[in-house]
Length: 426
Image 1 (cartoon, rainbow, N blue to C red):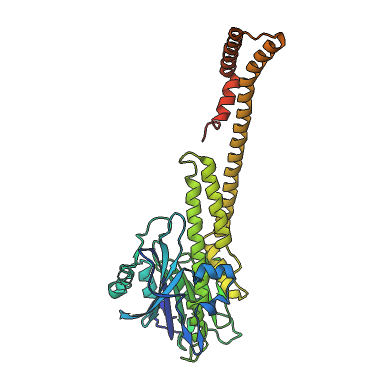
Image 2: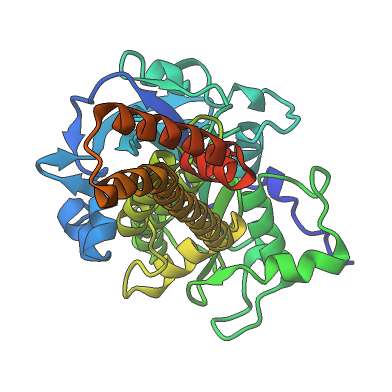
């Protein structure tokens, strides 16, 4: 009789790494070392210079800053609590015009107990056996960043309802549900189920995939190689190995390094894009809440242009998996569609402003016509008659005023005055 497959919530992998991304507000600039956390593997050190070679220059500036305009800082740590070992922290500044204090805190852990209950607890799932102590006590982000940054309350444009997690899990020889039979063997369906659970931070009891849609949901997995796959969802991402991890010198050490560095950075860029698109959406929603529509639309267009040139990238690097992960993140949050809607709506508002300005110009010309025609006619008649009498001039001016007032009281005159005032702002 075949033994039932192992439930992932009871399994501890050969190699378990966890990165937690928390939205924070900076209270001051960090006095930490500049640049991303420099993980090391042999002679390889993933500092700013090394990582920047993987990305286009604009993306590298967003992720790492420059010496004169730093955006990212790191600090090593060593805190062990409840099966989690914190090994380092990062802060990535993501300031905008409306929110200059916004940033993302990145916490790097090694996990030495079953990984799925940990990510479930971070997701706020119903937990048992003390898993709800995750990210509390000495691992509480608020305590770790005290005096430097405050964790957002879970509301607002840049707030995550729960921290974003990036899980890395490699199996041992006995973890059959995750393993290929060989490098060329077909991946068992249970492997993608494990991948889904780690990325969605749920068990089948928490979130059972509908059989009718499961194939579509799982088809979004990124096959990095025969050895491992990745899946990016709205609130989490996961990397899962498909052969037994043989230990310290195994390829998976390099895979774990990439999941914490280049691939993490692709997801962080996606987070920045999502947050800025959220802010642009907020700007669009209140464009009519106050006067001076033309000024507000001009500011909106300037912010869109700045976002487009600074943050909006769909091609990061010549290295394929990072691009695929970014595209997967964008698709999960519908970022291309949302940005297209923002551009279309902003174009509509720009046309509205242009129409109002044209109406105002036409109104000004109409007003000049209404004011100038009676006066010009009166003065022209006096000049033709050669009449230089001051009293006659005053009578002519008075008649001009009366005729002008009468003209402005007509439907055409009222229309001209309405156009001059802006046509009645929405």
